[in-house]
Length: 218
Image 1 (spheres, one colour):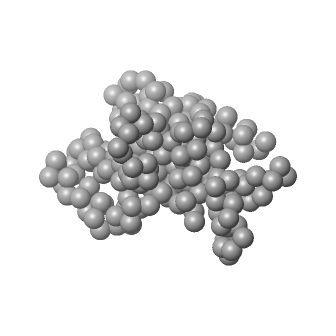
Image 2 (tube, helix red, strand yellow; image 1 turned 90 degrees about the vertical axis):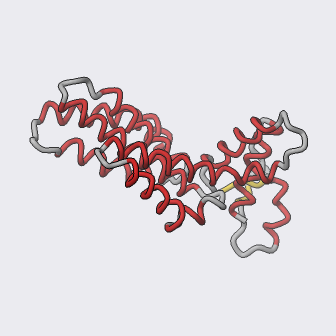
């Protein structure tokens, strides 16, 4: 039912320009854990974060030019593309950190075949996207660290890391706090510790999170 709600919201957004899961109203009468909640206007509203639905909508809009393509099949490619992107980024990260190409490819293969990524690639679940964003964040923080060691500006990489953590909010609300907390802690307390650089790098990382925190508070 969760996947049906996520897909229905994305499909209606791609076709009608507005997210709507009212086609699932009939399920609310018999499922123990309904896919949505009733609004005061009598419509059904999803309980899921919007991230995966937005990705599904983007894929469906992209595939709209081919009339013989099944919308459900296209929507279900979302998880597979996320898993493939995570594996590809793992290869880039490991090579960037000094590992051989063979080790990097083997790690990506093990990730795709021997972890829950194999399951998530077949599902419309937000955790797979959070995993991809976490890898992006770690890679960007690593790049920022390398830039500072070479006496270069790390601001762009820190902003990239912050944007990745902020986007995780679209897929799992609680993931924002987890990613942002550990990354900010690392950036602030990194050795050798110096207060001014620690505040500067942490501020650049947290800057993209401010709009998200404002939305959550509202």
